[in-house]
Length: 604
Image 1 (cartoon, one colour):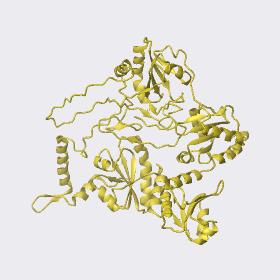
Image 2: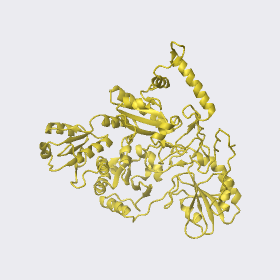
Image 3: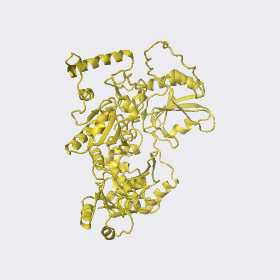
Image 4: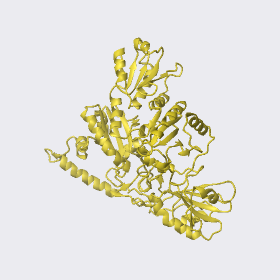
Protein backbone atom coordinates (compact mmCIF):
# COMPACT_ATOMS: atom_id res chain seq x y z
CA UNK A 1 0.00 0.00 0.00
CA UNK A 2 1.06 3.58 -0.38
CA UNK A 3 2.22 5.32 2.77
CA UNK A 4 1.16 8.95 2.85
CA UNK A 5 1.43 10.04 6.50
CA UNK A 6 0.31 13.57 5.86
CA UNK A 7 -2.07 15.29 3.51
CA UNK A 8 0.61 17.41 1.97
CA UNK A 9 3.02 14.57 1.34
CA UNK A 10 3.89 14.56 -2.40
CA UNK A 11 2.26 11.16 -2.82
CA UNK A 12 -0.82 12.44 -1.08
CA UNK A 13 -0.97 15.36 -3.48
CA UNK A 14 -0.72 13.11 -6.52
CA UNK A 15 -4.37 13.34 -7.44
CA UNK A 16 -5.68 16.02 -5.14
CA UNK A 17 -4.73 19.43 -3.90
CA UNK A 18 -5.75 18.41 -0.42
CA UNK A 19 -3.99 15.08 -0.03
CA UNK A 20 -4.44 12.87 3.01
CA UNK A 21 -3.93 13.75 6.64
CA UNK A 22 -2.20 16.78 8.17
CA UNK A 23 -0.80 20.26 7.63
CA UNK A 24 2.63 18.71 8.04
CA UNK A 25 4.70 18.87 4.88
CA UNK A 26 8.10 17.47 5.83
CA UNK A 27 7.94 13.78 6.55
CA UNK A 28 9.85 10.62 6.00
CA UNK A 29 8.23 7.25 5.79
CA UNK A 30 9.20 3.69 5.05
CA UNK A 31 8.00 0.40 3.66
CA UNK A 32 7.04 -2.32 6.10
CA UNK A 33 8.27 -5.80 5.39
CA UNK A 34 6.15 -8.88 4.94
CA UNK A 35 6.97 -12.42 3.88
CA UNK A 36 7.43 -13.44 0.28
CA UNK A 37 4.17 -13.45 -1.62
CA UNK A 38 2.35 -11.60 1.14
CA UNK A 39 0.66 -8.18 0.90
CA UNK A 40 3.05 -5.27 0.88
CA UNK A 41 2.34 -3.35 4.06
CA UNK A 42 3.66 0.10 3.23
CA UNK A 43 5.45 2.07 0.57
CA UNK A 44 4.73 4.36 -2.35
CA UNK A 45 4.94 2.79 -5.82
CA UNK A 46 5.97 -0.76 -5.00
CA UNK A 47 8.04 -2.64 -7.47
CA UNK A 48 8.55 -6.35 -7.78
CA UNK A 49 10.51 -8.09 -10.50
CA UNK A 50 11.30 -4.71 -12.01
CA UNK A 51 7.71 -3.61 -12.55
CA UNK A 52 5.69 -0.97 -10.78
CA UNK A 53 2.65 -2.10 -8.83
CA UNK A 54 -0.38 -1.00 -10.87
CA UNK A 55 -2.36 -0.01 -7.77
CA UNK A 56 -4.51 -3.12 -7.59
CA UNK A 57 -6.31 -4.21 -4.45
CA UNK A 58 -3.15 -5.74 -3.16
CA UNK A 59 0.56 -5.42 -3.87
CA UNK A 60 2.37 -8.75 -3.84
CA UNK A 61 6.08 -9.26 -3.59
CA UNK A 62 7.42 -12.09 -5.77
CA UNK A 63 8.60 -15.26 -4.05
CA UNK A 64 12.32 -15.04 -3.34
CA UNK A 65 14.05 -17.80 -5.26
CA UNK A 66 17.36 -16.06 -5.71
CA UNK A 67 20.82 -17.26 -4.76
CA UNK A 68 20.62 -15.63 -1.32
CA UNK A 69 17.76 -17.80 -0.08
CA UNK A 70 18.58 -21.04 -1.94
CA UNK A 71 14.99 -22.24 -1.67
CA UNK A 72 14.30 -25.60 -3.31
CA UNK A 73 16.62 -28.22 -4.70
CA UNK A 74 16.51 -26.78 -8.21
CA UNK A 75 17.78 -23.40 -7.05
CA UNK A 76 20.51 -25.03 -5.00
CA UNK A 77 21.68 -26.90 -8.10
CA UNK A 78 21.82 -23.64 -10.06
CA UNK A 79 23.76 -22.07 -7.17
CA UNK A 80 26.29 -24.92 -7.07
CA UNK A 81 26.81 -24.74 -10.82
CA UNK A 82 27.32 -20.98 -10.54
CA UNK A 83 29.85 -21.47 -7.76
CA UNK A 84 31.73 -24.00 -9.83
CA UNK A 85 31.87 -21.54 -12.73
CA UNK A 86 33.00 -18.79 -10.35
CA UNK A 87 35.79 -20.99 -9.07
CA UNK A 88 36.99 -21.54 -12.62
CA UNK A 89 36.96 -17.82 -13.27
CA UNK A 90 38.59 -16.73 -10.05
CA UNK A 91 40.93 -19.63 -9.50
CA UNK A 92 43.63 -21.40 -11.45
CA UNK A 93 45.01 -24.87 -11.76
CA UNK A 94 47.43 -26.13 -9.15
CA UNK A 95 50.33 -28.40 -9.76
CA UNK A 96 48.06 -31.47 -9.77
CA UNK A 97 45.46 -29.84 -12.00
CA UNK A 98 42.94 -29.17 -9.24
CA UNK A 99 41.02 -25.94 -9.18
CA UNK A 100 42.53 -23.43 -6.74
CA UNK A 101 40.48 -20.57 -5.33
CA UNK A 102 42.84 -17.88 -4.12
CA UNK A 103 41.64 -16.01 -1.03
CA UNK A 104 38.17 -17.48 -1.45
CA UNK A 105 36.21 -15.16 0.82
CA UNK A 106 37.94 -12.04 -0.45
CA UNK A 107 37.56 -13.06 -4.09
CA UNK A 108 33.89 -13.76 -3.65
CA UNK A 109 33.40 -10.42 -1.93
CA UNK A 110 35.26 -8.58 -4.65
CA UNK A 111 33.36 -10.38 -7.41
CA UNK A 112 30.02 -9.48 -5.86
CA UNK A 113 31.18 -5.89 -5.51
CA UNK A 114 32.14 -4.20 -2.24
CA UNK A 115 31.84 -0.64 -3.47
CA UNK A 116 29.64 0.82 -6.16
CA UNK A 117 30.22 3.91 -8.28
CA UNK A 118 28.71 6.16 -5.61
CA UNK A 119 31.23 5.36 -2.83
CA UNK A 120 28.64 3.31 -0.97
CA UNK A 121 29.89 -0.08 0.20
CA UNK A 122 27.74 -2.91 -1.15
CA UNK A 123 27.45 -5.35 1.72
CA UNK A 124 26.31 -8.94 1.99
CA UNK A 125 26.80 -11.96 4.20
CA UNK A 126 30.29 -12.66 2.84
CA UNK A 127 31.86 -9.24 3.40
CA UNK A 128 29.79 -7.71 6.20
CA UNK A 129 32.08 -8.78 9.06
CA UNK A 130 35.16 -7.60 7.16
CA UNK A 131 33.55 -4.20 6.50
CA UNK A 132 32.81 -3.79 10.22
CA UNK A 133 36.41 -4.59 11.09
CA UNK A 134 37.86 -2.22 8.51
CA UNK A 135 35.67 0.81 9.19
CA UNK A 136 35.44 2.36 12.64
CA UNK A 137 32.05 3.97 11.92
CA UNK A 138 29.80 2.32 9.37
CA UNK A 139 26.28 3.52 8.65
CA UNK A 140 24.36 0.77 6.86
CA UNK A 141 21.12 1.21 4.93
CA UNK A 142 18.96 -1.91 4.73
CA UNK A 143 16.81 -1.41 1.63
CA UNK A 144 14.48 -3.16 -0.80
CA UNK A 145 14.88 -2.67 -4.56
CA UNK A 146 11.13 -2.07 -4.96
CA UNK A 147 10.86 0.48 -2.14
CA UNK A 148 10.10 3.98 -3.41
CA UNK A 149 11.42 5.61 -0.23
CA UNK A 150 14.73 3.80 -0.69
CA UNK A 151 14.92 5.03 -4.28
CA UNK A 152 14.37 8.61 -3.13
CA UNK A 153 17.03 8.27 -0.42
CA UNK A 154 19.65 6.78 -2.78
CA UNK A 155 21.01 10.04 -4.31
CA UNK A 156 21.37 11.74 -0.91
CA UNK A 157 22.94 8.63 0.59
CA UNK A 158 25.46 8.44 -2.27
CA UNK A 159 26.27 12.14 -2.00
CA UNK A 160 26.85 11.81 1.74
CA UNK A 161 29.08 8.78 1.16
CA UNK A 162 31.22 10.71 -1.33
CA UNK A 163 31.52 13.70 1.01
CA UNK A 164 32.66 11.57 3.93
CA UNK A 165 35.12 9.63 1.78
CA UNK A 166 36.61 12.80 0.31
CA UNK A 167 37.09 14.18 3.81
CA UNK A 168 39.03 11.05 4.74
CA UNK A 169 36.55 10.63 7.55
CA UNK A 170 36.50 7.60 9.81
CA UNK A 171 32.86 7.24 8.82
CA UNK A 172 31.70 5.28 5.79
CA UNK A 173 28.31 4.34 4.36
CA UNK A 174 27.16 0.94 3.18
CA UNK A 175 23.98 -0.71 1.97
CA UNK A 176 22.40 -4.14 2.19
CA UNK A 177 19.67 -5.46 -0.07
CA UNK A 178 17.58 -6.90 2.76
CA UNK A 179 15.33 -8.82 0.38
CA UNK A 180 18.33 -10.85 -0.79
CA UNK A 181 20.39 -10.85 2.42
CA UNK A 182 17.67 -12.22 4.67
CA UNK A 183 20.03 -13.50 7.36
CA UNK A 184 21.48 -10.00 7.88
CA UNK A 185 18.03 -8.43 7.87
CA UNK A 186 16.85 -10.92 10.48
CA UNK A 187 19.96 -10.53 12.63
CA UNK A 188 19.50 -6.77 12.90
CA UNK A 189 15.72 -6.77 13.31
CA UNK A 190 14.93 -4.95 10.08
CA UNK A 191 11.15 -4.48 9.93
CA UNK A 192 10.83 -1.54 7.53
CA UNK A 193 12.57 -0.01 4.54
CA UNK A 194 14.78 1.88 4.58
CA UNK A 195 16.32 1.08 7.97
CA UNK A 196 19.61 2.80 8.82
CA UNK A 197 21.89 1.50 11.57
CA UNK A 198 25.29 2.72 12.76
CA UNK A 199 27.98 0.16 13.65
CA UNK A 200 30.83 1.38 15.85
CA UNK A 201 34.26 -0.25 16.23
CA UNK A 202 33.16 -3.51 14.63
CA UNK A 203 30.45 -4.18 17.23
CA UNK A 204 27.57 -5.91 15.46
CA UNK A 205 25.51 -6.72 18.55
CA UNK A 206 24.41 -3.20 19.50
CA UNK A 207 24.08 -1.00 16.41
CA UNK A 208 22.67 2.50 16.90
CA UNK A 209 19.49 3.50 15.08
CA UNK A 210 19.93 6.49 12.77
CA UNK A 211 17.98 9.52 14.00
CA UNK A 212 19.13 12.25 11.64
CA UNK A 213 17.62 13.90 8.60
CA UNK A 214 17.15 11.98 5.38
CA UNK A 215 19.19 14.32 3.19
CA UNK A 216 22.88 14.41 2.32
CA UNK A 217 23.76 17.30 4.62
CA UNK A 218 21.86 15.77 7.52
CA UNK A 219 23.54 12.38 7.09
CA UNK A 220 27.00 13.97 6.88
CA UNK A 221 26.44 16.09 9.99
CA UNK A 222 25.11 13.14 11.94
CA UNK A 223 28.12 11.03 11.04
CA UNK A 224 30.65 13.83 11.58
CA UNK A 225 29.29 14.45 15.06
CA UNK A 226 29.94 10.81 15.90
CA UNK A 227 33.31 10.62 14.18
CA UNK A 228 34.79 13.76 15.68
CA UNK A 229 34.53 15.39 19.10
CA UNK A 230 30.87 15.91 19.96
CA UNK A 231 31.65 19.15 21.74
CA UNK A 232 34.46 21.69 21.47
CA UNK A 233 36.48 22.26 24.65
CA UNK A 234 36.44 25.97 25.53
CA UNK A 235 39.39 26.79 27.77
CA UNK A 236 39.27 30.58 28.16
CA UNK A 237 37.10 33.64 27.62
CA UNK A 238 38.49 34.36 24.15
CA UNK A 239 37.74 30.89 22.75
CA UNK A 240 34.30 30.92 24.41
CA UNK A 241 33.41 34.34 22.98
CA UNK A 242 34.60 33.33 19.51
CA UNK A 243 32.58 30.11 19.70
CA UNK A 244 29.40 31.95 20.71
CA UNK A 245 29.73 34.52 17.93
CA UNK A 246 30.56 31.93 15.26
CA UNK A 247 26.94 30.82 14.71
CA UNK A 248 23.42 32.11 15.22
CA UNK A 249 22.83 29.29 17.67
CA UNK A 250 25.31 27.42 19.92
CA UNK A 251 25.04 25.27 23.04
CA UNK A 252 27.63 25.29 25.84
CA UNK A 253 27.65 22.89 28.77
CA UNK A 254 29.32 24.33 31.85
CA UNK A 255 30.38 21.42 34.08
CA UNK A 256 32.66 21.31 37.12
CA UNK A 257 33.62 17.76 36.11
CA UNK A 258 33.79 16.91 32.40
CA UNK A 259 33.97 13.22 33.27
CA UNK A 260 30.85 13.31 35.43
CA UNK A 261 27.44 11.85 34.58
CA UNK A 262 25.91 15.20 33.67
CA UNK A 263 28.67 15.92 31.15
CA UNK A 264 28.34 12.43 29.65
CA UNK A 265 24.60 12.96 29.20
CA UNK A 266 25.38 16.29 27.53
CA UNK A 267 27.68 14.54 25.04
CA UNK A 268 24.87 12.11 24.28
CA UNK A 269 22.51 14.99 23.52
CA UNK A 270 25.18 16.54 21.30
CA UNK A 271 25.16 13.35 19.25
CA UNK A 272 21.46 13.81 18.52
CA UNK A 273 21.14 17.57 18.02
CA UNK A 274 23.63 17.73 15.16
CA UNK A 275 22.48 20.98 13.55
CA UNK A 276 23.79 23.05 16.44
CA UNK A 277 27.48 23.40 17.53
CA UNK A 278 28.13 22.15 21.06
CA UNK A 279 30.88 23.32 23.41
CA UNK A 280 31.94 22.40 26.95
CA UNK A 281 33.67 24.40 29.63
CA UNK A 282 34.97 23.60 33.13
CA UNK A 283 37.26 26.56 33.83
CA UNK A 284 36.24 28.52 36.92
CA UNK A 285 36.97 31.70 35.00
CA UNK A 286 34.23 30.89 32.48
CA UNK A 287 31.70 30.08 35.20
CA UNK A 288 32.34 33.52 36.66
CA UNK A 289 32.25 35.39 33.34
CA UNK A 290 28.87 33.90 32.42
CA UNK A 291 27.39 34.34 35.89
CA UNK A 292 27.15 30.67 36.82
CA UNK A 293 27.84 28.88 40.08
CA UNK A 294 26.67 25.35 39.25
CA UNK A 295 26.50 22.98 36.30
CA UNK A 296 24.35 24.58 33.60
CA UNK A 297 23.58 24.10 29.92
CA UNK A 298 23.33 27.45 28.12
CA UNK A 299 21.76 28.05 24.71
CA UNK A 300 23.16 31.19 23.07
CA UNK A 301 21.23 32.62 20.11
CA UNK A 302 21.25 35.76 18.01
CA UNK A 303 17.48 36.22 18.15
CA UNK A 304 14.66 36.55 20.67
CA UNK A 305 15.97 36.62 24.26
CA UNK A 306 19.57 35.86 23.27
CA UNK A 307 20.27 33.24 25.94
CA UNK A 308 18.38 30.46 27.71
CA UNK A 309 19.81 28.58 30.69
CA UNK A 310 18.97 25.02 31.75
CA UNK A 311 20.44 24.40 35.22
CA UNK A 312 21.36 20.81 36.02
CA UNK A 313 19.26 19.41 38.85
CA UNK A 314 21.78 18.13 41.47
CA UNK A 315 19.45 15.26 42.42
CA UNK A 316 18.15 14.19 39.00
CA UNK A 317 21.13 15.12 36.87
CA UNK A 318 20.59 15.67 33.15
CA UNK A 319 17.79 13.77 31.42
CA UNK A 320 18.87 13.21 27.80
CA UNK A 321 15.37 13.15 26.27
CA UNK A 322 14.20 16.16 28.28
CA UNK A 323 17.23 18.30 27.42
CA UNK A 324 17.03 17.28 23.75
CA UNK A 325 13.41 18.44 23.55
CA UNK A 326 14.12 21.68 25.44
CA UNK A 327 16.94 22.52 23.05
CA UNK A 328 14.77 21.77 20.01
CA UNK A 329 11.98 23.99 21.33
CA UNK A 330 14.17 26.91 22.36
CA UNK A 331 16.26 26.71 19.19
CA UNK A 332 13.22 27.91 17.27
CA UNK A 333 12.32 31.54 17.01
CA UNK A 334 9.37 32.51 19.18
CA UNK A 335 7.38 33.06 15.99
CA UNK A 336 8.43 31.01 12.97
CA UNK A 337 7.73 31.86 9.36
CA UNK A 338 6.62 28.84 7.34
CA UNK A 339 9.07 28.39 4.45
CA UNK A 340 10.67 25.51 2.62
CA UNK A 341 13.77 26.00 4.77
CA UNK A 342 11.97 26.13 8.14
CA UNK A 343 9.35 23.41 7.64
CA UNK A 344 11.60 20.65 8.93
CA UNK A 345 12.39 22.65 12.08
CA UNK A 346 8.72 23.44 12.63
CA UNK A 347 7.58 19.83 12.48
CA UNK A 348 10.75 18.31 13.91
CA UNK A 349 10.35 20.18 17.19
CA UNK A 350 7.34 17.97 18.02
CA UNK A 351 5.41 20.77 19.72
CA UNK A 352 1.86 19.46 20.26
CA UNK A 353 -0.08 22.50 18.98
CA UNK A 354 0.56 24.95 16.16
CA UNK A 355 -1.07 28.40 16.13
CA UNK A 356 -1.10 29.77 12.58
CA UNK A 357 -1.51 33.33 11.40
CA UNK A 358 -2.39 33.37 7.69
CA UNK A 359 -1.61 36.68 6.04
CA UNK A 360 -0.63 38.27 2.78
CA UNK A 361 2.91 39.60 3.22
CA UNK A 362 2.42 42.10 0.43
CA UNK A 363 -0.12 43.92 2.62
CA UNK A 364 1.44 46.30 5.21
CA UNK A 365 -1.80 46.25 7.19
CA UNK A 366 -1.72 42.45 7.48
CA UNK A 367 2.00 42.40 8.28
CA UNK A 368 1.32 44.63 11.27
CA UNK A 369 -0.79 41.85 12.82
CA UNK A 370 2.41 39.96 13.62
CA UNK A 371 3.09 42.25 16.61
CA UNK A 372 0.18 41.08 18.75
CA UNK A 373 0.75 37.52 17.56
CA UNK A 374 4.35 37.62 18.82
CA UNK A 375 3.40 39.05 22.20
CA UNK A 376 0.85 36.29 22.72
CA UNK A 377 3.36 33.59 21.77
CA UNK A 378 5.60 34.09 24.79
CA UNK A 379 3.10 32.59 27.24
CA UNK A 380 2.86 29.27 25.38
CA UNK A 381 6.45 28.41 24.50
CA UNK A 382 6.91 24.65 24.36
CA UNK A 383 3.15 24.00 24.33
CA UNK A 384 2.12 25.92 21.22
CA UNK A 385 4.32 26.91 18.29
CA UNK A 386 3.30 30.19 16.67
CA UNK A 387 3.77 30.24 12.88
CA UNK A 388 3.18 32.90 10.24
CA UNK A 389 1.99 31.54 6.88
CA UNK A 390 2.20 33.72 3.76
CA UNK A 391 -0.84 32.81 1.63
CA UNK A 392 0.85 34.12 -1.52
CA UNK A 393 4.18 32.41 -0.87
CA UNK A 394 5.26 28.98 0.35
CA UNK A 395 2.12 28.67 2.43
CA UNK A 396 -0.23 28.75 -0.56
CA UNK A 397 -0.20 24.98 -1.02
CA UNK A 398 -1.36 24.27 2.55
CA UNK A 399 -4.54 26.32 2.16
CA UNK A 400 -6.71 23.48 0.78
CA UNK A 401 -6.14 21.46 3.95
CA UNK A 402 -7.82 24.28 5.87
CA UNK A 403 -10.53 24.79 3.26
CA UNK A 404 -9.17 28.26 2.59
CA UNK A 405 -8.18 30.51 -0.30
CA UNK A 406 -5.79 33.50 -0.26
CA UNK A 407 -8.77 35.85 0.04
CA UNK A 408 -9.52 34.42 3.51
CA UNK A 409 -6.40 36.11 4.91
CA UNK A 410 -5.89 37.44 7.45
CA UNK A 411 -7.18 34.65 9.65
CA UNK A 412 -6.09 32.39 12.50
CA UNK A 413 -6.16 28.62 12.97
CA UNK A 414 -4.91 26.35 15.73
CA UNK A 415 -3.96 22.76 14.88
CA UNK A 416 -3.72 19.90 17.38
CA UNK A 417 -0.93 17.86 15.85
CA UNK A 418 -1.79 14.41 17.22
CA UNK A 419 -5.09 14.23 15.34
CA UNK A 420 -4.98 17.27 13.00
CA UNK A 421 -8.06 18.79 14.60
CA UNK A 422 -8.36 22.43 13.62
CA UNK A 423 -9.81 25.26 15.69
CA UNK A 424 -10.88 28.74 14.67
CA UNK A 425 -12.29 31.79 16.36
CA UNK A 426 -15.97 32.57 15.87
CA UNK A 427 -14.74 35.89 14.58
CA UNK A 428 -11.06 36.61 13.98
CA UNK A 429 -9.55 39.00 16.51
CA UNK A 430 -5.85 39.73 16.32
CA UNK A 431 -5.07 41.48 19.59
CA UNK A 432 -2.62 39.85 21.96
CA UNK A 433 -5.33 39.38 24.60
CA UNK A 434 -7.82 37.81 22.17
CA UNK A 435 -5.24 35.40 20.79
CA UNK A 436 -4.04 34.36 24.23
CA UNK A 437 -7.60 33.81 25.47
CA UNK A 438 -8.47 31.70 22.42
CA UNK A 439 -5.35 29.52 22.66
CA UNK A 440 -5.88 28.88 26.36
CA UNK A 441 -9.51 27.95 25.76
CA UNK A 442 -8.46 25.36 23.18
CA UNK A 443 -5.85 23.91 25.54
CA UNK A 444 -8.50 23.70 28.25
CA UNK A 445 -10.84 21.78 25.96
CA UNK A 446 -13.44 24.53 25.85
CA UNK A 447 -13.48 24.96 22.06
CA UNK A 448 -14.86 22.41 19.60
CA UNK A 449 -12.80 21.64 16.51
CA UNK A 450 -13.75 23.25 13.22
CA UNK A 451 -14.60 20.49 10.75
CA UNK A 452 -14.43 20.71 6.98
CA UNK A 453 -17.47 19.62 5.01
CA UNK A 454 -18.26 19.63 1.33
CA UNK A 455 -21.78 20.47 0.20
CA UNK A 456 -24.07 17.47 -0.38
CA UNK A 457 -24.25 16.71 -4.12
CA UNK A 458 -27.62 16.77 -5.79
CA UNK A 459 -29.44 13.46 -5.40
CA UNK A 460 -26.87 12.18 -2.92
CA UNK A 461 -29.45 10.03 -1.08
CA UNK A 462 -31.18 8.59 -4.14
CA UNK A 463 -28.17 6.72 -5.52
CA UNK A 464 -27.38 3.05 -4.79
CA UNK A 465 -24.24 4.28 -2.98
CA UNK A 466 -25.18 7.28 -0.81
CA UNK A 467 -22.66 10.13 -1.07
CA UNK A 468 -22.05 11.45 2.43
CA UNK A 469 -20.36 14.68 3.48
CA UNK A 470 -19.50 16.02 6.91
CA UNK A 471 -22.86 17.75 7.24
CA UNK A 472 -24.91 14.61 6.49
CA UNK A 473 -22.76 11.91 8.05
CA UNK A 474 -24.31 11.88 11.54
CA UNK A 475 -27.91 11.61 10.37
CA UNK A 476 -27.13 8.67 8.08
CA UNK A 477 -24.42 6.68 9.89
CA UNK A 478 -26.13 6.80 13.27
CA UNK A 479 -29.69 6.23 12.11
CA UNK A 480 -30.85 3.66 14.67
CA UNK A 481 -33.12 1.96 12.11
CA UNK A 482 -30.38 1.31 9.54
CA UNK A 483 -27.25 -0.80 9.20
CA UNK A 484 -24.85 1.54 7.40
CA UNK A 485 -21.66 0.42 5.63
CA UNK A 486 -19.39 3.37 4.76
CA UNK A 487 -16.28 3.57 2.61
CA UNK A 488 -13.90 6.41 3.56
CA UNK A 489 -11.75 7.14 0.52
CA UNK A 490 -9.40 9.59 -1.16
CA UNK A 491 -9.92 10.52 -4.84
CA UNK A 492 -6.24 9.93 -5.65
CA UNK A 493 -5.99 6.56 -3.85
CA UNK A 494 -5.27 3.72 -6.30
CA UNK A 495 -6.59 1.08 -3.90
CA UNK A 496 -9.85 3.02 -3.57
CA UNK A 497 -10.11 3.28 -7.34
CA UNK A 498 -9.51 -0.46 -7.71
CA UNK A 499 -12.39 -1.36 -5.38
CA UNK A 500 -14.79 1.30 -6.69
CA UNK A 501 -16.58 -1.10 -9.04
CA UNK A 502 -17.09 -3.66 -6.27
CA UNK A 503 -18.54 -0.97 -3.99
CA UNK A 504 -20.96 0.21 -6.68
CA UNK A 505 -22.04 -3.39 -7.29
CA UNK A 506 -22.60 -3.80 -3.55
CA UNK A 507 -24.77 -0.66 -3.60
CA UNK A 508 -26.85 -2.05 -6.44
CA UNK A 509 -27.28 -5.35 -4.61
CA UNK A 510 -28.66 -3.71 -1.47
CA UNK A 511 -30.40 -0.61 -2.86
CA UNK A 512 -33.85 -2.04 -2.17
CA UNK A 513 -33.08 -3.25 1.37
CA UNK A 514 -34.93 -1.11 3.89
CA UNK A 515 -32.43 -1.60 6.71
CA UNK A 516 -29.07 -1.62 4.85
CA UNK A 517 -27.35 1.49 3.48
CA UNK A 518 -24.17 1.46 1.38
CA UNK A 519 -22.40 4.83 1.47
CA UNK A 520 -19.10 6.56 0.84
CA UNK A 521 -17.35 9.71 2.09
CA UNK A 522 -14.40 11.60 0.61
CA UNK A 523 -12.24 11.89 3.73
CA UNK A 524 -9.94 14.45 2.12
CA UNK A 525 -12.75 17.00 1.86
CA UNK A 526 -14.77 16.10 4.96
CA UNK A 527 -13.79 15.77 8.62
CA UNK A 528 -15.55 14.06 11.50
CA UNK A 529 -15.12 14.99 15.14
CA UNK A 530 -14.90 11.55 16.73
CA UNK A 531 -13.70 9.39 13.86
CA UNK A 532 -10.07 9.51 12.75
CA UNK A 533 -9.24 7.97 9.39
CA UNK A 534 -5.70 6.60 9.27
CA UNK A 535 -5.67 5.07 5.81
CA UNK A 536 -7.51 4.72 2.52
CA UNK A 537 -9.75 2.96 1.95
CA UNK A 538 -11.14 2.54 5.46
CA UNK A 539 -14.44 0.68 5.79
CA UNK A 540 -16.67 1.14 8.84
CA UNK A 541 -19.97 -0.58 9.63
CA UNK A 542 -22.50 1.24 11.82
CA UNK A 543 -25.09 -1.27 13.10
CA UNK A 544 -28.69 -0.31 13.75
CA UNK A 545 -29.78 0.36 17.30
CA UNK A 546 -28.69 2.70 20.10
CA UNK A 547 -25.15 3.22 21.32
CA UNK A 548 -23.42 4.75 18.26
CA UNK A 549 -21.46 1.55 17.63
CA UNK A 550 -18.86 1.25 14.91
CA UNK A 551 -17.09 -1.83 13.53
CA UNK A 552 -14.06 -1.60 11.23
CA UNK A 553 -14.10 -4.04 8.32
CA UNK A 554 -10.65 -5.55 7.73
CA UNK A 555 -11.26 -8.51 5.45
CA UNK A 556 -11.06 -9.12 1.70
CA UNK A 557 -12.51 -6.32 -0.40
CA UNK A 558 -14.82 -8.10 -2.83
CA UNK A 559 -18.60 -8.11 -3.24
CA UNK A 560 -19.21 -11.64 -1.96
CA UNK A 561 -17.22 -11.12 1.24
CA UNK A 562 -18.90 -7.76 1.79
CA UNK A 563 -22.27 -9.47 1.43
CA UNK A 564 -21.39 -12.21 3.91
CA UNK A 565 -20.34 -9.50 6.36
CA UNK A 566 -23.63 -7.62 5.97
CA UNK A 567 -25.85 -10.71 6.05
CA UNK A 568 -24.10 -11.86 9.23
CA UNK A 569 -24.81 -8.60 11.06
CA UNK A 570 -21.42 -6.96 10.79
CA UNK A 571 -19.21 -9.99 11.33
CA UNK A 572 -17.84 -12.68 9.06
CA UNK A 573 -18.89 -16.29 9.65
CA UNK A 574 -16.01 -18.44 10.79
CA UNK A 575 -14.49 -20.45 7.99
CA UNK A 576 -13.38 -24.09 8.55
CA UNK A 577 -9.59 -24.45 8.60
CA UNK A 578 -8.15 -24.92 5.14
CA UNK A 579 -6.91 -28.40 4.25
CA UNK A 580 -3.49 -28.42 2.68
CA UNK A 581 -3.52 -29.71 -0.89
CA UNK A 582 0.22 -30.17 -0.97
CA UNK A 583 1.27 -33.84 -1.10
CA UNK A 584 3.17 -34.97 1.96
CA UNK A 585 6.19 -35.95 -0.10
CA UNK A 586 6.34 -32.69 -2.01
CA UNK A 587 9.51 -30.67 -1.66
CA UNK A 588 8.04 -27.62 -3.35
CA UNK A 589 6.35 -24.68 -1.65
CA UNK A 590 2.83 -23.66 -2.51
CA UNK A 591 2.58 -20.14 -3.86
CA UNK A 592 0.41 -17.95 -1.66
CA UNK A 593 -2.76 -16.39 -2.98
CA UNK A 594 -2.66 -12.75 -3.99
CA UNK A 595 -5.81 -12.09 -2.01
CA UNK A 596 -5.67 -12.10 1.79
CA UNK A 597 -7.58 -10.88 4.76
CA UNK A 598 -5.35 -7.86 5.24
CA UNK A 599 -5.79 -5.80 2.09
CA UNK A 600 -3.42 -2.99 1.20
CA UNK A 601 -4.50 0.59 1.61
CA UNK A 602 -3.08 4.08 1.43
CA UNK A 603 -1.95 5.07 4.93
CA UNK A 604 -2.15 8.59 6.30
